[in-house]
Amino acid sequence: MKVLVVEDSQVVLKIVKHLFNRSNLPLQPVFCETMQAAQQVIDQSNDIFVALVDLNLPDAPKGEIVDLTLAQGIPTVVLSATYDDTRREALLTQGVVDYIVKESRFSYEFALQLVGRLLKNQHIKILVAEDSLAYRKLVRRQLERHLYQVIEAEDGVAALAALKANPEIKLLLTDYEMPNMDGVKLVQNIRREYETTDLKIIGLSAADKPALSAQFIKNGANDFLRKPFNYEELHCRVMHNLEQIELIQEVRLAAYSDYLTGLPNRRSLFEEVEKHFHDLKLNACVAIMDLDLFKRINDQYGHDAGDLVLKQFGQMLRQAFSRFSFARIGGEEFCVVLEHLSGSQAEQLMSRFCELVDNTDFIFHEERIPVTVSIGVACRDQDSFTQVMSRADDQLYRAKELGRNQVVIE
Ligand SMILES: Nc1nc2c(ncn2[C@@H]2O[C@H](COP(=O)(O)OP(=O)(O)OP(=O)(O)O)[C@@H](O)[C@H]2O)c(=O)[nH]1
Image 1 (tube, rainbow, N blue to C red):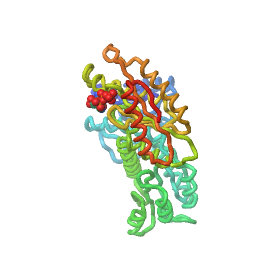
Image 2: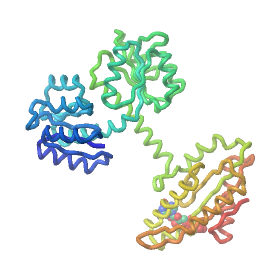
Image 3: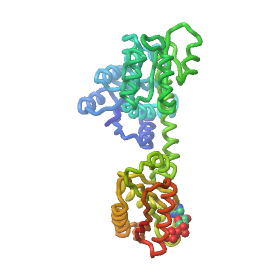
Image 4: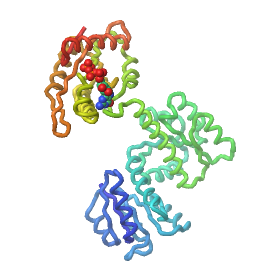
């Protein structure tokens, strides 16, 4: 997909090109200096994701480019040399995504951030609970302009049903006065089930009650907007709330995954497995793996080579055991929980993996590093997950004693 940049200033083009090269946006920028050139690109492409346009072009000095891109249904971000309140208002009413004044390189950075935001927004669902059809449609149009997926509900009851049907909804915008269930009651109901880290809520109301914002927030909403609101404020608050969810997701991911290999870490494995480990009706085995003589690899080939081996081993593990729970549980130690497998099935699977590792080329700076793994396996019984892991660990040490590069099952 493409980003159409229509700008005649060489300085601005240079900055935007530089920022694009530095960004990791999965979009191809296409640069045009005139409206005519932009028209040609539009005629020849059907994959323009967004347009960043200057209002003053040699062949379109009055912002005609905006009419062109909006008529083609292309989300349009205006880059303007000067700030003009009336113009800004008119352009936002016309349907542009945003109006950015070209003040410094930060303005262009903001423009590219906005493009990245629009890419993400396409996958974000927002629920709008509002009994006025006209207002609901108005909010929908605003949100869709920023490419969010919008779901509508005409009251609190319908909003609860919509949340059940679409658990991936990340944000709820809810009016206060609605039939059947008002906004505050809706928030109370939602917060019994949905954490504020997973679902953000913004209350809306035109009611003349100064305490309403506090009432919304005390009952679990994250924010409040009084109607009629300024649409830029709506977008800023929506974005701010979604960014908080994304930040929490990033922190969670960092807390539950191993930095080097990207595999789940010990904490993640325990939280995932411990919940259902006591279901004794089904077979399950635990395998602990430890790379052999890893210290020697580090000493002989260097720490970077050791890291590369760990990463490659992690990829192999992910591929081979994708349907099971697994983790890097220590330096060169890994664990796989083999649900639904008997001891002999687990042993067979692990023996094949052991062989695969032995026969795989681990190459660092064109040098082949010999890598083998020892594996201990124990099967689920009345013991806790930690106890079964510890028994698998005992078998691992037997495998080491017996000469490494092998599987031992208790
Ligand atoms: N490169 C690298 N090395 C690591 C990492 N984590 C742990 N290690 C190294 O892994 C080595 C483990 O060594 P040992 O516990 O002595 O065991 P070993 O050499 O594998 O010997 P056996 O387990 O008996 O086969 C240590 O030298 C650690 O420094 C890591 O993230 N990267």
